[in-house]
Image 1 (tube, helix red, strand yellow):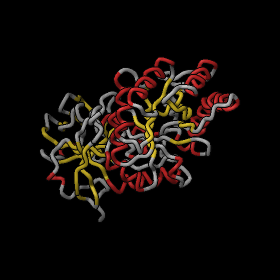
Image 2 (image 1 turned 90 degrees about the horizontal axis):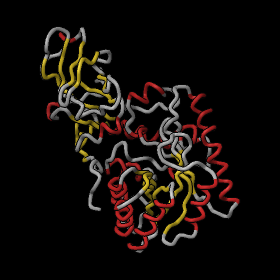
Image 3 (image 1 turned 135 degrees about the vertical axis):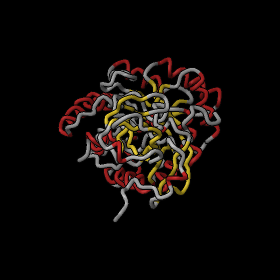
Image 4 (image 1 turned 180 degrees about the horizontal axis):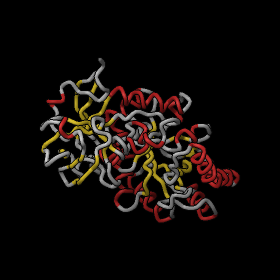
Length: 371
């Protein structure tokens, strides 16, 4: 009988709690990302915030994916160090971070570095840093398509920013970035309707800029829930992130149109059985993203277990099957939200052929590598 997909033959060698990456499942998810993108790696600019691992970047580069999107300077440096040709830091760079980005451009001259702006003050930070370091930085205008987190509404003020960038020394206007993270409806039809409505003003704004003589080289659109929708429009660059590792938060919502596989698992062990129908695991909220309601992790062996409490290092579950589990027994859990969960671990144990074969550092877990 074939073991369960999450089985690890030599898991006795793995200290808990631990983060496990399943190589074959990551490979499946990367292949599916390419398939949804029409088989063209040039259409993809995957977000690296989910995995933050240099080895995963290398896997994507081997598939022809050489452009990436990041959230931090450290993630940007990681991409360049592995060989990325083009890195978009999708955060406004202000203060010293503008200078750090310019330092990266000087350190890795074969990589094109860019950032986003939604105000003239941000342009000034980038321009000053680029001029001091004698480098050229790419810039995308961040358009607010409904999320209300960063960005500027597509209109006159946004057009002014584009014209300012057009003539700014050491800055190169490269296009538009629009993230629709507020669109995550279960229904594909509803998601598509909301996505199209959100991007109609963005597309109109792009046409306006082109009509005013400003070349818009790229429209970077969407995240994971709208990945497949944007993929149907050939004029957009796609930037899914969670798709590489997946989690049950998205897996439960999009089983049909986004059939990715969970590729990251949390290994925990039973450390106590405090009373009838209870087991305690060594998986506190220092090891799994705590921002969501329980269950924050779903165990393959106990999918219906009820969370009684969670503290920094402990997770107490209630289940009528408690008697089936022994002290020291391992359980395997899929996180609800994988992105912040990964960043809580310094390394991931790589599972290949039901065995842990190596450990990958979570390279960009910290916000600073060298720059």
